[in-house]
Amino acid sequence: MMRHSTMDTPAGAFTAVVSGDGAVRAAGFTTDVTALLSLVHPDLAGESRPAAELGAVSTAVRSYLDGDLAALDEVPVEQRTGGEFMAHAWRVMRDIKPGTPVTYTEFARLAGRPAAVRAAAAACARNPVALFVPCHRVLRTDGTLGGYRWGLDVKTWLLDHERH
Image (cartoon, rainbow, N blue to C red; front, side, top):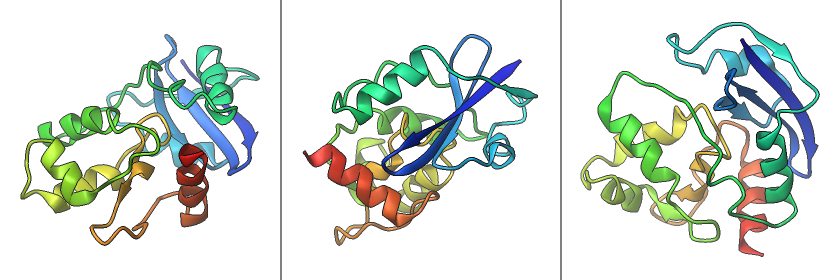
């Protein structure tokens, strides 16, 4: 059985959904648990019950918000997709360090497919575990923000937080 919890952050409400063993399956800046559960791959989907705390996941988010920008790096995530490239791209995205955003073009190169800029952008757009897999650290080639499922104001806040 999955569990979920919402916490207040300076960027807005943040909800995480975790598996029975504590791996994050969905996360985002929302209180809409149904919307988050719709992002979980069908092989990993199921019911989720509310929890006041998510143990190490909640602790890591609080530490990140308090300035320990590496606090999320070791939090396990569990996400699936039908494509090999997207799964690989999500693993590569976790290696993008705070304060050093990359462009979609650079992200495609880091993921081993320099010509696959659209596929790299799709990996960002379909990322179900925002913050833990930091799609907010990928920008348009011209340096502008591009999109973000949880809003550009949230993306701006996260990037500013990681710069300081």
